[in-house]
Length: 337
Length: 281
Image 1: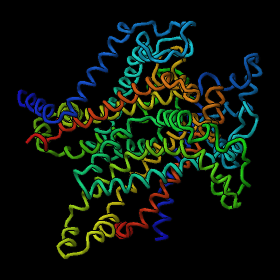
Image 2: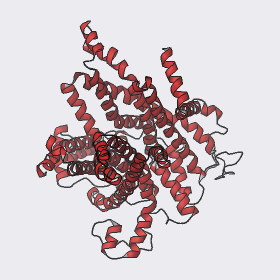
Image 3: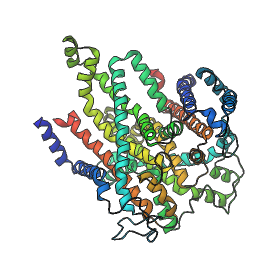
Image 4: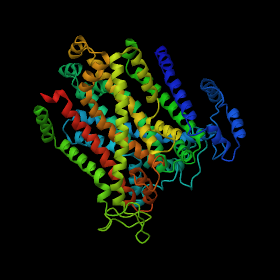
């Protein structure tokens, strides 16, 4: 199995190379002349020439690509013009906030979508089947930023159940000591129940908005996969042999149905990471999405490139994790290759 | 031909949801074509005397912070939103379908190059890639269309590739080849018309996704400049008022956005019923 996992790691290399080439090309496709842009509006042609040489823009594209790779290897993503900070530092401090949102969003979405899909498939035509169908069709049509705003209006403004949509913690609390960067986990590690509850309260609305958006493809896939497995020969045999229904559904059918669902997780992550950016804006979440949006508005290019690169590498890593999970769940994968 | 019509009528009457989707599509198309002439107010005209009015007989959807009529703004925005989605889907169709068919039909190095390019695009979270493209190429409507088209291309190319691959050695292709047709001619005259219906279904589904994507980009401040009415911008403008209770500013453009996406998703399912050969028996 280890060899198989190693093989998958090597298999992810072309994706990483592709991502690096695309982000490099995006940096070089800046509108106008980057040298003139960085030299400022009052620069003389001579000054622009100097900046061009300093930035290495007088070299050929492949040479520039090598320089770009060397900078990346040193962890140099450039500096943000707006804050003056290295982009890497900014991203490192903000990434846990985004990750916390994404991971809880996925967790909630899976916890609702999978049981819903299974119940819908085992009781076709029942009210839960119809509920599943309505939720999957409506869920993909609801933009996460709009759901987020509706939740803010109903649960914060109308009912007052949720705290104000302003960041990761209410101002009365201070951040727990940094261990993982995920406030909920850090608060638990520090044994601080009040901060934990406060962090959960802030997470409630954005996580719900993300979960609603990503629930649809997961529930749809679970339902379809369960229906297909339940109609297959080995389930018929199990039924004919008189095995208890619970064992058939949960031990045999469910495990086999999980395979296509795990495959869809890749697509779900793509949705999730994109929706994350929008949800972060709605909830003033101090993650890398908000950072990128601020940079976009002030035409600050280095942070945007750093953001795109980080997200893409994160996505490649997540897909790799899904691949490995697949090997763990399905022992047949090893024999086929 | 009358068989096809009969089948379309059967699908429409058999499934009320499909009929509903088609009527909704007609309505949205009507708004896009005639919206600017039907709007009761000038969508850009401000009115200091009537700011943040809740929905009423005079202003069906209320007014925003500058006293602009939200109903007129939502109505007029239909054309822009639909236009962006439409042109990006056309572009996706042109690039994705051709590349995919060529990959599936010729195989070999064409297949490998197309596959590798598609994989590279799919290695990014798609919305994030769209943000990067718009940021790099410049903040214009044209680039929103381009970015939306690029991120949707791999899905298209995959569908087209799979369908073309099945048919590359089909009887009618062999027949065309034996009667002396060139490969390019077979590709365009035989393969493309045969898989067109399947690609059209994909078009409808992608349309919904394209609308969502474009609205998301303008929601974070990319693409269209603020005074222009566009659903994503309208929701963004109303976002700040959700916390203070003026729900109508963001709700109505959001609902319009949702309805349009919902319509194209339903339409895609309905079109699939029409073109799916298994349904024809």
